[in-house]
Length: 450
Image (cartoon, rainbow, N blue to C red; front, top):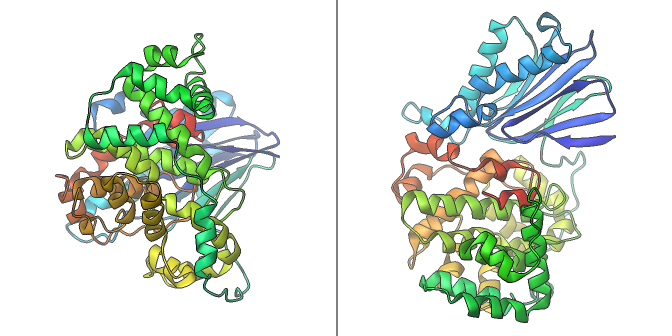
């Protein structure tokens, strides 16, 4: 059976066929609609309740208020009858604890409310509503049988796991040793972004060309992103002309980091390439937040977002071994912070080991600091705004692009952390609306188009 991911801001409609539709949901809302009598079904994935910016007029599918009518129209045009349709709604998890003054944080709840109201207005029966809470879900629709299911997106272990002893220091060091240093040209680009220096284009292309593997990977990445173009990028000079210096630098850094996330285990990743996709998405969102707030250099914010979880790469093999214990610990104690659980299982967390990697690779201090404190950005002293931007980008990816990697939302200090970069909770919906839709696609390469 083929499995197809229905990403945020999209829907799929069709007749019975050997296909399983899936949507991984946290704050987003997914809806499956089936007409068993006529053999028609489909799934839609909504990001926000309704348009909140001028950009919304060009992407109506990502809002419940404008996308659901389009979804219903497509179903009817395929042969479904509204009076025969049955709906299953899932997702809509809370961004954080909602109090009387924090109703703006209940984005998913308002998306679900609008969706239900529109369905009831059309006389469509609600077979199941599974919304709210603080955790992610997976909505599945078997297009062959038109049966629908809702399950937890994180792995569930029925039996109590056997305790796994804390790893020895030598074992953690071996995980660090397995990761080769970042290529020198990528490190130079990071240093240029940190210092906000002008780039000599001839020197840049000359340095990239010295690393044949990185040059080839950069061109491969550029061509996969520009796959719709008739003009194949066949040289670094062509890439520079076609993409511009800022995009080329972004691709070089991304290509350099890509190999680190190519892990064979299923530790932190909940899907193939989950860690890398989350990293690229966080990088793109961090860059957009830097532009929006003016509090950090966008190129530096992109790189900081790309590297924020690099410590997970070193711990991934260890987590693969201890996964049952780790997952069970997180599910049993809802108040347990993600990094606290890591320290219980490993003796340290991914931010700590990420700092050790940053120091081994001689990354700029600003990047090392944002890696170390992306979960507690108020501890950053050198560039606190950068750490806050990476925190928010990581948080938004966890809220609105679920199913990539194991994670746990923690919005306890969201309001002051937003305020640290000049934002308020009431603006959160507008911030989400600015995230490029390519970030929610299943391909990391498409996220780079943003």
